[in-house]
Structure formats: structure tokens, C-alpha cells
Length: 227
Image 1 (cartoon, one colour):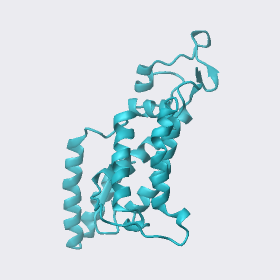
Image 2 (cartoon, one colour):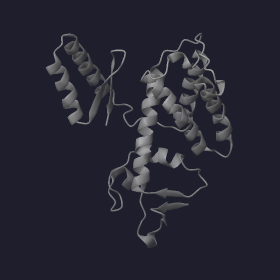
Image 3 (cartoon, one colour):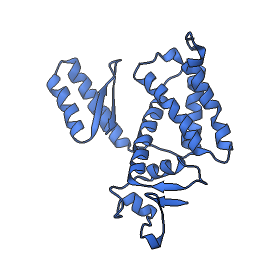
Image 4 (cartoon, one colour):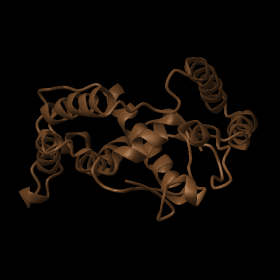
């Protein structure tokens, strides 16, 4: 049921990888270490009765996918929703983001009940990620989804992402880093308000040098992420 780079895993093939080795990266086949959440996410993307093929490429793709999912989900969790807001109606109702999200959400329980179809659940959740990111980046108006749909999406993603699939951001629990970043963001906002571009750029550039990206949002706010 488990293969490594397309070959059955077994002692006779000298390709057995223990979970501790995946987490530490201490195995000749591995090019780096992978977090427990990355491995969990990778496994959930394949049905439990299907063959699971481990490879560096697949694990790295899972790492990127988990990061993309959790960044969108964490933003959605912080979003304040007004349940009274009604979705706008485009000319073609079938193409409405609101209708699409409602359909994707309605299938989650069906897929999970169909022999623990975690791969299909994740596929549906990933179809919602571009919608969330479009709202986040203001490429889509907030009233493209009704307040009720947004609230339902928040509740359902918490249920499936956290409670059922047990997924967390690899940055979860790093509260001190979040507090430090908030301080730096406030300093940078103050510098920009004073037109102190030297300080503003210095903060951004030095953070980028250590793998943290600060993004200036369209509404004047700032967000950050590890890269």
C-alpha cells in the first residue's frame, strides 16, 4: 500500500523511511525534512485504501499546498461577517461564486461519508481557496458571497480542516513571532506615514532576507507570511 518513488517500500529494497526520518530529513532518499502536518496533509490527499507513493516532489507539493490552504483559511477565520449581507446576482447565476461555494460545501459531508473520502473533501476545499484569496486581495467584492454563505464556509472549514482532518498551520503556536511581527508592522506603518521610506524599505528588505515577506494591502493594511 506504500511505495517510494513508484517502488514498493520494503527492507529488501533498502527504501524504508520511518516517520521520524521524514520529520528529521535524516534519510539518503530525502532532500529535506518535512513537518508532521505536511506528512498528514500528504496522506489525506490519497484515499486510505489506495496506494500511497512517497517522493520528494510529492511531499514538496504537499508542503506548498498545505501552506496555501492554511493562509487562506487563517484569513477567513479572522474575517468579520455580517449575516444580513445579500450576494450580488451576476447575469449567469450558474457562474455565481455564491452558488459555487454553496455547492462545494454541500458535498463535504457526502464525500466524507463515502468511505472516508478525504481526498475528495480536500479537492472541494481547494476549489474554495481561489475564492477566499480573491476576497482577500479585493479582486472580488465582499458581497459576491452572502453573509450567510461566508458564515457557513467559516464554520464548515473549521469543522473539516481542524476538527475532522486535524490540520494546522506549521506556524501554529508561534505566538511570539506573531507578536514581534505585529510590532514591526506598526513601526513600518508609522515610518510610511512619516514618509520615512528608508526605514520602511529597510524593515521589508531585512525581513525578506530571512524569509519573511511583508505585503502592502490595497486597504492600507499589511500582512506577512513566511516564504
